[in-house]
Image (cartoon, rainbow, N blue to C red; front, side, top):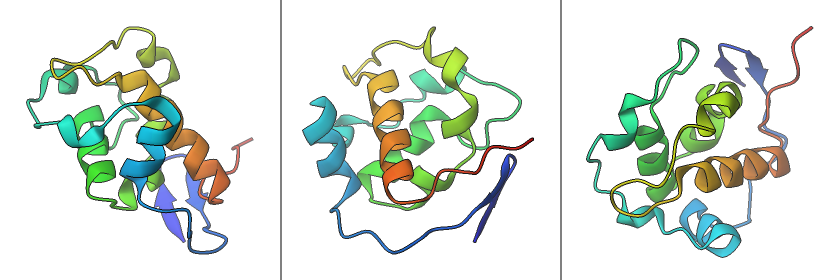
Length: 114
């Protein structure tokens, strides 16, 4: 069980789908290994975000499960409208949407709160 600001996330089973970097690359064409942690995308912030976009991208590059279990994935939809391609040409909204889909496929998406 993983606690987030929006509720508890209960993983169904460990994934055998492969590393996050490969999944993101295959579904979006974006290589998260290009992220050099420049903090350019960290200027986008909302009160409910527990990680910055840069931290999420770095976690995905390391295949760290926190890339799929953070509350930022589920509170940043409006912010993605203003976020564009980073200085290293990573399409941040595409990466975030791919991680949301992967979290749903792995059973890691939080249940909707009433």
